[in-house]
Amino acid sequence: MDTPSTYNVILGRPTLNKFEAIPSTVHTKLKFPVGRDVREVKGDHEDSRKCYVDGVHKASRKREELMNTLGGVRESIDPDTKKPRVMPAEELLIVQLKPSQPGHITRIGSGMGEALTEELIQFLRKNCGVFSWTPEDLRGINTGFAQH
Image 1: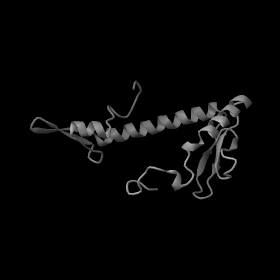
Image 2: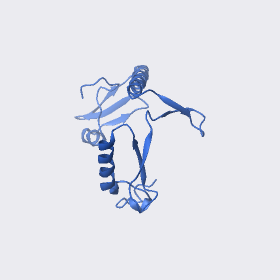
Image 3: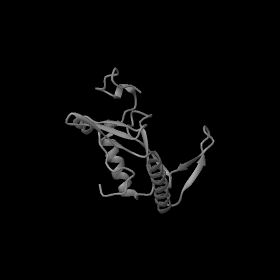
C-alpha cells in the first residue's frame, strides 16, 4: 500500500509462521531464525506510542472532515454511558427485508434519491440470506471453535 502508516510492514499469521517469527507487542520485538542463530528486530516504545497517537489524531481529523462533507457532525448523549456519540449525518430509512419476518430489518441512508434507494432495497432483499438474525442462522460454524 502506498499510504502513510504507523507500521513499516504488516505481517499476517501465515507469513509469521512461514518465517518462524515470534512477535511481541509488549516488548516491541520480533524474533526469527537465521540459520542456526536467532535474530531480533527491536522497536522503540516511545516511537511506537508517538506513531500511534499521530495515527489516531489523523484518523479523527479525517472522520471529522468526512462527516462535515456529509452534512455536519451530529452528536447525542448515549443514555447508558452518558458520553457523546456520533449520529448519522442523515435520517435513516428502516427497510423490512423479509415481509414474513417482522424482525428482519436494516437501515439505510435517505439521501440517495428514489431510484438508487429502490435499487439498494431490492438488492438487500435479494441477498438477505447473508444476514444472521439468530444463532441458528450461523450454519457451518462449530460452536466448539467459535461462539458469541
